[in-house]
Image 1 (tube, rainbow, N blue to C red):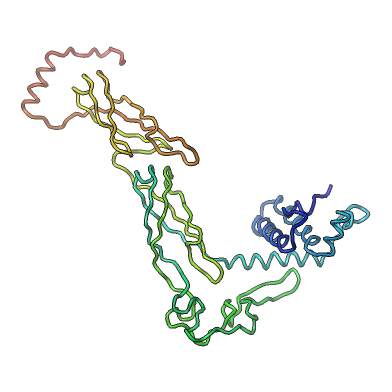
Image 2 (tube, rainbow, N blue to C red; image 1 turned 180 degrees about the vertical axis):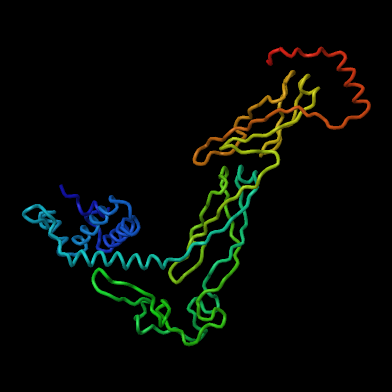
Length: 347
């Protein structure tokens, strides 16, 4: 059973020729063997795409297909009957589109360091970016004010020269105009005819709450500019280490040190969190190593409304130096406290 040609290209039967052409080029480039050398499935998709466009890309054959379906293009043995010339022309279109795609603007990659709290709560950060923008003096034409650039004769303004025939067509930048399609006789003094200048711009970056270390956020159209479009700016987020907090997934771990009297008698202590200190009730007879859970005080979980938790680890603070009075009191306390039994189980 043959698959519908319209379904292969992902278009409707009312699609105009330009829509069919765009869909074909996009799908053919995505499944091209050069991009998917180890994928038999991609090769089959590529063949089906080329076969479909060989019919739907020609008005007369498309009319026959709309009337009769695949019967109009199959032999008595049930095999496809498509002109090889049409196949070669379709594949050549892919090669030409792929060549133009390689000349798309280059994206920019930068790094941004944020604090632990900014990663947890989200923040707006101002980032200085060096990017290529059209020259303001010449308006991006590359020609000095009062003059105009002329169309390149060898490439007829296309910026490319074609060599070879059929499947073996190759495209290269026109050496006369360096791929611009224009000849500039009086270059702009500021950009020297290149049409672009390097400029430092201040861009506002939105750091999403809950972002992980080394993750990337993208600003569309904020990369280098070219003759056709602007590239994207990819910002790699790096989170600074925090002296108090440690992250595990969406959860935060921290340590609070308490004195011996606080651990024995209990107390109300302050526990730091990324959103500010909170009061934590320390019950009597709290042992060192006890962990308390603060619900919802961790990192937001991206794509959800949930948050992680914060785990507060209690540790006994043993001072390295004490005063004479403190020593006197500790000695007195040691005399009145019973010694623990070595075999006594830990509660």
